[in-house]
Image (cartoon, rainbow, N blue to C red; front, side):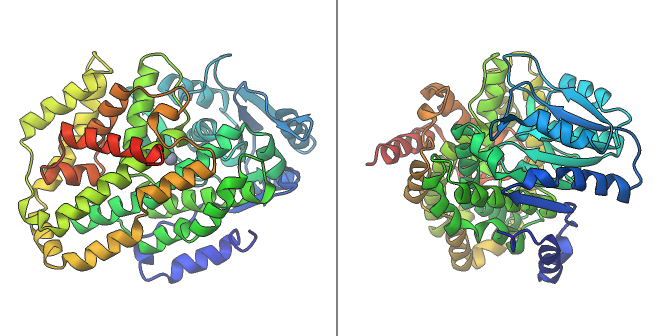
Length: 472
Ligand SMILES: [Zn+2]
């Protein structure tokens, strides 16, 4: 994988791309993935601190779950290796027995505990890394991630998924300066976490189509084929690695780690999570928000996204049929008052206080206003529909292929298979409401504006997903 992480070569490639003008600079300076990667950590941190003339201790952030590398405790290894060169301050996140959440209170506490640090080192998976980004950004400190599992693709970008009024919101924070992924640490990570990252990457076969259509119809301005290619060209290697993940195969884990990193970089340089996050993520976010609101532990992010990708791929088939049948000449603009009532009612199901509904309506209102101005772009797209149809089909993979990829890694393909299982009513609610939670345009918005998004469509998608998942 060394050619993938020649970051200078990647920078040159991005600069030479025909669509380079819209891309953001790649903020990552160093990525070390593989055997013995952790041994590079003290040099990586010391070089960063020296190059930027930073003073203050190194704050090492971690949650309370012990992690191992070979037979040793990982946090002790990290702390001792850094303490031999620099002053280290330990910052623990969370309370015993509970998964860490990136809520306002946790962020404030960690940011306080990192005060004065010249460098923040996060030892953890997605949420701890996201909290670390926010804390490093608040203090202008250097930031290094020691990735402890292949759980999500959010390590290598400049955004954090934070909870705002209980709603998952992607918020600009900072790039990691360095990412350190040691194969021996990945081998020790829980299998379901490593499988979860593969499932998160299944969105690579649905979300780019949402992004393409959004930009085509004037609902986004940022689509970049160069960005989409970064993770997509790893597709065959990723699918080959999938069945080897449950056995802890080292090369397979390194391949998934590299693809997660490229996927993260694609979001960072695009300046949006859109290349990797479409309808499937909105469904997953809603389910995560609902379980958290109920005071329960949500299933792993990637597991929900994987199951959501199957539903999104199924909906794409219906939407493409409708669009090929002249659907763009029949689009409608929902009535704002009705839409507002719909958003608030959907979110009141999980948050009777109305705060989540308020937060979501703020975003949905902007999407609706933009759609009301999109008529000209819609007409233009309709004129040349066959070529857009081809482009969209090239970006998508069929739902059967996605089920097969998830199954090959032992990942859940259905909401009822994730841990803890999502019941049928919650799955129906999350799929039906997914377009209402954020400003981003997805295939579910397209279905809504085509007038085909109703209870029977949602029920049919979930029925079709169940049939595919059962091998029918
Ligand atoms: Zn994700």
